[in-house]
Length: 306
Image 1 (tube, helix red, strand yellow):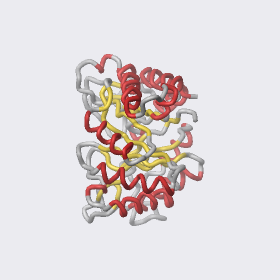
Image 2: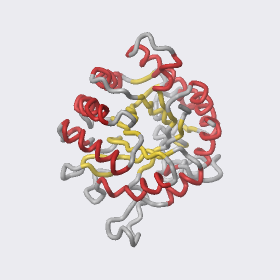
Image 3: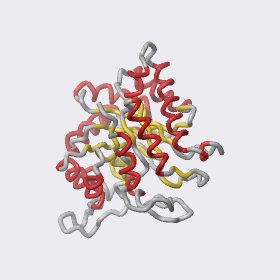
């Protein structure tokens, strides 16, 4: 299968509350489905499904944005034959696995796939706000009934690969018999070195994750392992503001991913694929003064993998 470009989107950002069809519940901004179709991305990763204060699955930890709230965006993507991927967890809020039973997790994963027609479920596990053994147990059950739905674990990475917690997570999934890919978050290294070549740092991370997967699956060749690897850079200015992922870095990553037949490239985030010259990290622009037009990163990644 060819490498996909499926950027992440924060569905709660810039939400539309005045839409008459969805008033007063609101919906994700339709500009994102329009841009996804216009730029030609393969799909969007909708983030993040989290635990609400009333212990339900919701977007951005808000009871005002229950599971179904993001359906208008998913429906538009599906109608245009773009893939819908739903991501659980994220950096800011607790994952539902912290409160749900294994059976409740299986039911939620099944509901998401049926309602959103999701082709992939992603688990963005950060900052200890999850129970990975429960997730692994639930996915093993879910995957038996849904073998065609892809599973990815999105985990913090350094150029040298996953850290110990990430390795524990993928070991747990393997032990449970889950088939999955590993998506390294190639961003915010805070190492004082990677900022000099963010494209190379990301491809180094991908190579390191491939090597780590080789230890999990001894006897597998590089040609078998790279399709289990994905990489997600943070476009433009990173939270470590010495780091700027530039447009040529996107070419470097995309060319490498295509050459190695990697699973997908993500990016953080589709909301940010707009130009600005801010000197701080902005939620809706890249803060990269070299970006001239909205969608430049998407178009650069796509040109490299096609």
